[in-house]
Length: 117
Image (cartoon, rainbow, N blue to C red; front, side, top):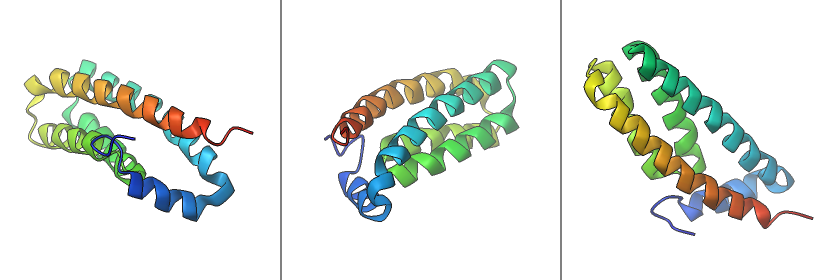
């Protein structure tokens, strides 16, 4: 697993804490993240700086908790752009977030496959 996209030590810790519920956590994060991406797109399309800031902040937290540090960093940049109402850079940031999430999704689905019975 590529630590540049996912911190494997965070996943090991989550696995230890969650035990049998670890696969459910992975599934929940993936579904939740898809929803968060939709909200980011809606805020971007509406040019709503506050909604963008809040959505990016929320997504940043869940990414950090799952060890998706590069994705969390991109969300932080988007959150700060929303806070400063610098919306001209938001389309590029949302696109970068989507691309990074696509990588994280593949890595987490691979991780999830290890727990199929």
